[in-house]
Length: 160
Image (tube, rainbow, N blue to C red; front, side, top):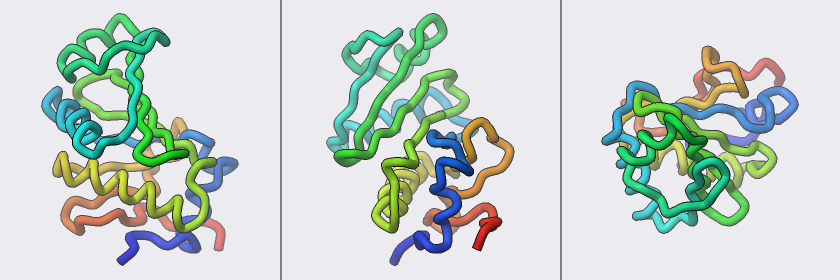
């Protein structure tokens, strides 16, 4: 069963309305949650590249990554599948923040890729994962609902 249908969420995948890199967040996290995400990346066999201040280095443990991010721009690029880039930014332990590029997520296949990612992270952490328009964290539109154990609409599309 599909979490979301393209026809129902098409508006939320429009870079002109959402910005090309909408924000995805897991709130109220810890270093342990960050480590669980790093472990998920490894266990899924997703390709990844970690860099500090633009220099690629070996992916550290979450505690080290977060400590370094205070003085460096720590970025983890993950490819859950070819052609789909997810960019994690290690700003702080209390929030896992990442971007997805809507230009890479077109049609039902793109919706399915995003839903699989949000579900995988949400299930691993047992926490909600929300997607908001770029630079508008107060208005989530799609998210993983822990109780429902699926990705759901959090806002109604304006256009039909």
